[in-house]
Length: 334
Ligand SMILES: [Zn+2]
Image: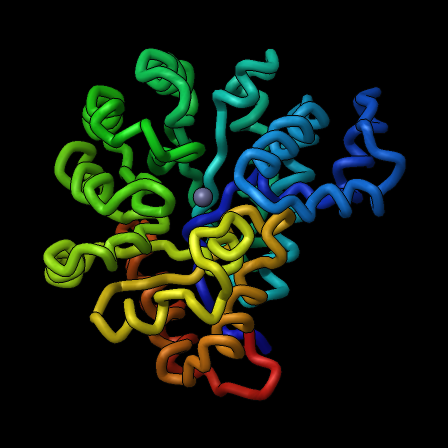
């Protein structure tokens, strides 16, 4: 039995496996420039951020209808459940779909078809977080928030993703203020490829409650001290960091040093279809390569529930934490 955990950094578009991509392409009459699933899987072995983003956006063309989004989310939830995920806070990128002529309602209601039945089907509770693409304009982010207004009962919070460098958090001050006024929770990617200053800015200017990635905080001892003092959760994605070269190898990952520093770290999969593994695979990889002991693994699992947006259901959070405390480690843990 896998270690119970929450996944807090997961882009639903990044869970599109080659088999489903071909199935949806056939359903929608979209021609993919790959001979078969093997050829597409080969393309998933990219070596840098740009080739990843090119493929990521190219494959989104197969997502057209509510049922496509439902099938995508349901496939993720089944895989996540099999790896011990009990609660998932799922990112989606509406601007990438709106730009292709797919309506906000198609995306949100489609995802909701799967999320709404996730507890019954997979035993996984869920939240939905709408991300803004930071390489798009602030005006586009505001228009996206406006387009989401009819669906806010489905959306727990907002996030900020895509290419970080050159797009500091301050660019999105206004849309984050508007999101806060609407009662939305706030997170943002910061300090992955961008500098530690972006983390400080995300906290001070955008008012984020969690920082996605954030590993470059380790370059600034005063910032580390602040993150520890304020108990700011960081959603780390170790296998993603290796594939996108944020670290040279997994053995170089700062996770052990970050835990030693007292940071509230969590382990997540980011874009698992592309980066070599789901949440449990990431846990297994850090256990093996970074030699994390059972206490550390249990701490990471506890952190994931402590950092999740379950303030509206503390009873559930307590139940999940009790599952982690009662967990007995075996050899095949992930
Ligand atoms: Zn991410």
